[in-house]
Image 1 (cartoon, rainbow, N blue to C red):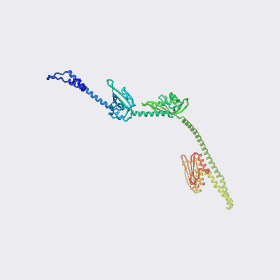
Image 2: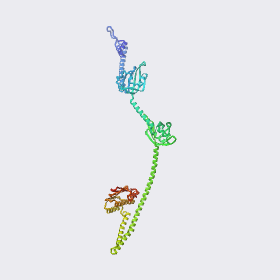
Image 3: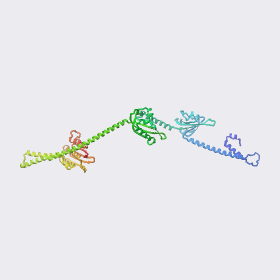
Image 4: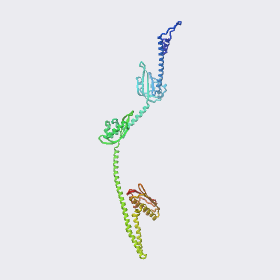
Length: 542
């Protein structure tokens, strides 16, 4: 067995030393002379040999576990998403993980033995901090192979030997480019919000959960005629009427409880000095990162002018409604008067017609009969003057009957509107030679008197115009009773005329006025050289 110091210097190591000692102690010593009888083993030496063997086996197991743990640790470190760099005491890189190579664009072996400054941007403070102790969570920058500076979240720890000397530095860096981009976007968004908030045309302010105002923009200050410091000392209730403050408190409580995210009210606001203005108010809740209520945004639009306009409009509507009621009452009275007038007029016409028929016309007929009897008594020959007188009496009878018919045809009272118009159409066809067409659908119930009389007068006037002026070949008359009233049409194929001309007869204007007075309407459609249509819609008033 070699001396222990020699075995140690040869590099066999502690494990080999334990193995040699165990073997040496487990065997009896050999004599250089001839063999001698076997000697009994020393129990103490056997126990020592056994202990050395057990220690040797335990050491081997520990060494194997240590090697396995080292491999596992290396695999874990290489699989980390963060960049891991181990730097020696000389400031040179000893090892890197895969994240360093992937992020910075280097191969792992490209960085071994290189100074840390190879990957650290000049603007970063790491190199000065490495040997001062542990550094936790500072923002720095690594430099990629392409020259791009990559922002990182940096930490490092110094590893020292038992003598307190720096043995190595372990650095860990997290790529925070995505976070930086998000922070930049957030900062830009916040800046836009601040710009909008400050320059918005509507009033805006921050509202605390205790309804304390803060950060009022210029528009809100202008609305309330208060400075920012004055508003910062005010609560919402200080700027409202009591009832409106109570409504806000109730709705804001619902906002805080999560029952709603926003609410809107329109109410007066109290300016400095007590003057009121109307505002359309919106309150919107802002939650923190955990979803808990943080504060609210108050937005107020001055709608005083709109409210004044609405009030003026409402007053105008009420006035119009009053005028409308008054007008309707007047129209109703006019229609009543018209109905009475029509009835009175028709009654007067009937009385005059009866008087003509029973009075003057009978005298004329009697005179004609007496003169004829006188002529017959004289042998049938009469004086020419007497004959002319008898002829004039006959003409007077015809004219009297025509006047009676125009005043109030007896058929209208005896047989109704449809039969009266049918006979008039037959007379027109006989007198002018034009073709006539008559359609009438009045339903089962009789028309009200004013409607029947007005319809008759319109058709009568239209047919008189056809006979006098139209030179028509065809004439069509149609009456149809619908739910909303009576529809009437008179159409001829005559020479036509210009309805807008001043020379249009009084009869047509009278027809329009008559229809209008009873709540209906009459339309005249014609042109020179073309057909003429008279269209009327008459209500079935009673």
